[in-house]
Amino acid sequence: MRYLLLVLFCFFLVPVTAQETYKEKKPVNQELVYEGKDFYPVKIYPQKFKSKKPKNVILMIGDGMGLAHVFAGYTANGGNLFLNNFRQMGYAKTQSSNKFITDSAAGGTALACGVKTYNSAVGVDSNGEPQASILEEAEKKGLSTGLVSTSAITHATPASFIAHEGARFTYEAIAADFLDTDVDVFIGGGLKHFSQRQDGRDLTGELKAKGYQVLQNMQEIAAVKSGKLAGLTAPEHNVRYPERGDMLPVSTETAIRILSNNKKGFFLMVEGSMIDWGGHQNSLPYIVEEMLDFDRTIGKALEFAAQDGETLVIVTADHETGGLAITGGNTQTGMVQARFVSTDHTGVMVPVFAFGPGADQFTGILDNTDIQKNMKKLLIR
Image (cartoon, rainbow, N blue to C red; front, side, top):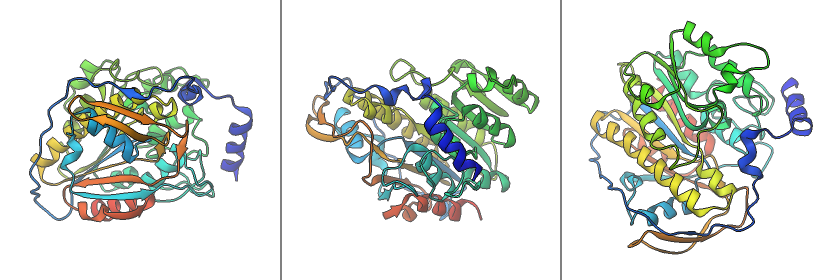
């Protein structure tokens, strides 16, 4: 009950923070054309794996990524994406426990914890009771764990894997929840929620006391090969692509390198947060640039998985954003044209892609909670 009251309080009394301004920018002139740029090369990897069940799972969430977002990226890169490697595909229903249209908190919680919850909740069920996430279950089994995001690491999707709060906007409480876990690696924005807090706590100092390397510079982060790492790359969110450079693929490579030191295996969640933000702003160039950055990051995961032979890579979304429709394009030039029907989330199913041992468990029409349940069945044994 206290969680429900907290949600109501936050909804009616707490103003939207700077973290949520990407939702408030209602487009005056929709950006409906992506003109096309240079294409990047895509490698196709062999589908040969060492076992029927994975030792490692990499869950990659394109926030707001619907099928049209994927196809916009496909067209923009000349008909080639690293996603072309995935032969096992399905769709996931995204509805939350109290709304037909989910938010990222409820959507993230379904993927993390395998339960439906109400919009705004992270890591708790519809009664406000904390639920163990796949990351926490992996920790208990002695696996290494990690989170990577282009948003603040305290934002709804990554928070769903590590925090248990009734309201997604309680960023400082979510940051404190990181100290209650043994997560090995987390890289993303949100430094201010660890170091400039109303309660006066300096969580960066507490993280160092727990053995974490607490770093802010991407070059320093990319050089880490072992140990615990807290990479806090921006005061709140990182900037959009291309301004942030290769933060997401490099962070993902770094996390995989560190986590793979554990012979028992690992679980890693990677979020391409800002595909969603381009949808909220009805900006096709924003969506395409973020989609292609996310796909290049998928390429890093696939490179490891193909070499390792014991890693399952799953790519999906928490919901679709913008009601995007592709109305024209040219794979020769990379030009894409589109229309939007919303500046918010929609209720359509989202794609699910799987590569590696156990990939056949992610085909057909699934509920978003099935993704967590199937990961748990394969990894936590």
